[in-house]
Length: 292
Image 1: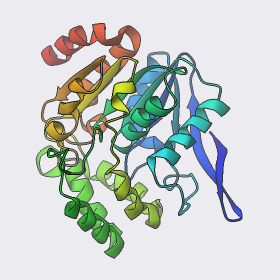
Image 2 (image 1 turned 60 degrees about the vertical axis):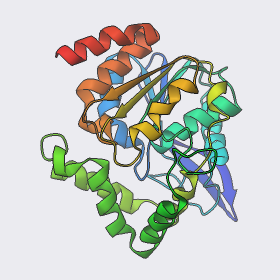
Image 3 (image 1 turned 90 degrees about the horizontal axis):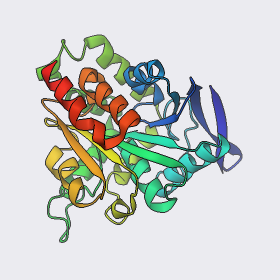
Image 4 (image 1 turned 90 degrees about the vertical axis):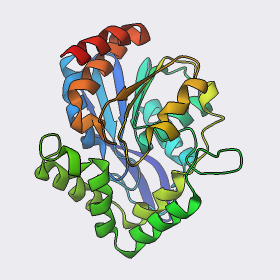
């Protein structure tokens, strides 16, 4: 575990907490809202067992990283990621994002290119563009996000309760796929995050990634729950085959937003197969998962 300094706010350094485990090809894991790098624990074990070096970090505002009131936008989040990759001198990376973390993956490849990156993985993707506009009728009305911000400002703990119920589809999947204790652990992590980030992050969800996506020139695997209530499949992952050249989109049947926790028996074999064999390995891996 370690820290890198990426910025300053007034007299205080802005530091990112990260963990660097194992050896082999580096896999960089970028977490979703409102969690931290430990939220990847079910993938971390599978990746370490498969012989990969696993680097997971906490986004500014969350986990053990600094909690500033500056830099809550995807250009800054991605600059933070770039600083981490440069300081650790990582190359031939598999860059993996979940939810908000998919924004860093897409913006990084759009802005910094793929010199350091070998392939990309998106779980519960936020791109291409969530906000409904004249040229994006598939999006969601902006009033929805204003309501979310108001709820997070008024009582973020009550908001997190509602959010995580939909994050895990607890009405359908508890307790078999999401225990009360695992739900509570996610809630606890969210509560230790920055109060400012809890609502400031909402604006970042409306980032337009449509110009970044065609610049992605590495094989890309997309895994997304068909019953995702946070980022509905058709408005997000379902649109990506038309926007990324070399991509495989795999719907996880019955999956909620956080399929990494609820459906590891699907996610992990597909993830490790892709890292080992690229997109050519996905069909065989899918058949094994389906028949299991």
